[in-house]
Amino acid sequence: MEVLLTLNIAMIFSALNPNKVGIKYSGSEFYVMYKEMPLGVAMVPPFYQPSHSNTTVQTELVVTRVNILQAAALDLIRDATVNDRVPLRITGDVGARIRVLQINSPKVEVSLDCQIVISPRRRALTSKQCGVDGVNF
Image (cartoon, rainbow, N blue to C red; front, side, top):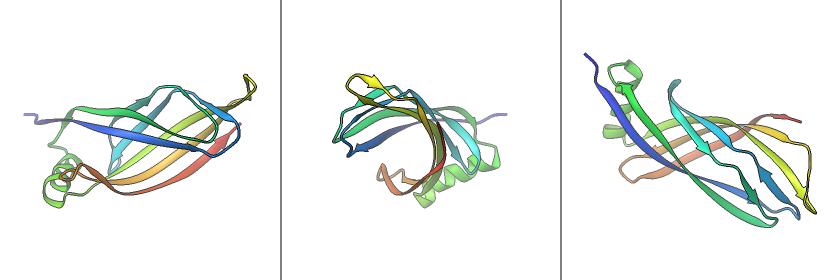
């Protein structure tokens, strides 16, 4: 017998560009995990960010048909319903090019690793800690 869980998590990424040049971002895939159990992939489309701007990009993580009889899935349900505290890890690579006078620089890729905690009842982010896990030129 299988008992399956399906849920949607709206995610909003914020990019701050205090520089005098624009940044052209490639499309990215962010992997979302709960206690090392993969939940899904959030796709962020490519976008251009003008200089001196703060840009928000919204995406949705769709978790479909996770077998909740697995131990980690049972912990996820308990954390969401009883503890109102769901810790998630989000990892992914972000490719970017600086754009000056319509000319793009070579691509720089930054690997991000974030630990976040969400409150399902409040539908809010309660903590976040993000870091750069590596940079490739």
